[in-house]
Image 1 (cartoon, one colour):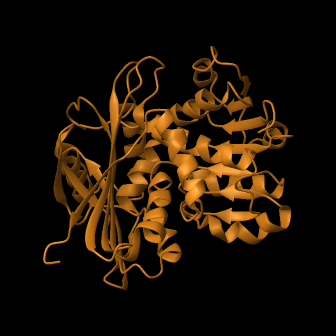
Image 2 (cartoon, helix red, strand yellow):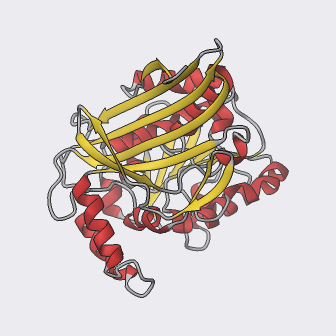
Length: 375
């Protein structure tokens, strides 16, 4: 990597802030946000702060001029439109916005512009996809089943919501309303969000409810030979029950939802110093490279960084995106086009480099193996 390469971060919310924190001491970082208050949170770090709305004419072009990589931490509602503009400008992009639109539709444009773009590059989708691709190619001879369980949670949940959130509230509500596209036993299925509830227990959290959400996405194409691919989100049981009641009462209806979004934006904000944790379990079953029928799990539990004021969900999401950005900056991943994060997981050296970066920052998996019942 050259000395202090220029990098632009779009969005200085809790996730963008973690990106700035992780990159600003080795890169020349410009961070753009329309909120001066948000930008104040990074004043102590060596970066250039720009208070502007990237959707306004000319702002985006000026903000990313000369940037070797742009990291987009913008909400999904505007993510696709911004991504298309960034690609049109020929910028390399690492994007965490989980857009309703299919970002791979921009692959030809990115290839023509010579732009390397990695989308869905957060913790899940993102880090989970990297590990899934690694397992499918390097740990299993035949991967039969993959289930991703993941959740960002307040460490001390409080009524009535029993939930807090570092992302845009509307993005979380999208998870609760977007149809879930999976593959189960070789058949493409679309399931209702919030369905398939089951209870998982973790020592750090107690019992959690896991339910279907639409996060498999690009893995459906990337792992065509895996019969079962499913994602479930983890929440405290009281939150799950409350959300289901709100849905049944009509609060997710299109004419009511804007008001619900307004309430959730206020109610789901973390107070200064309030702690959270990220819990993820990646479950793989199949015939391993050694020929045995096994279940391999990767468990991750990450906690709030009180010293630097970084939420765990911001750390795990922002640090993953920053690690991918470094691989692009170093020239280790330079492929014009739009790529899902699993593109890095298929390459063992890139996967190891990414996981090493995260482990150096305290984000690490515990791996366990067990024979499948009846094998």
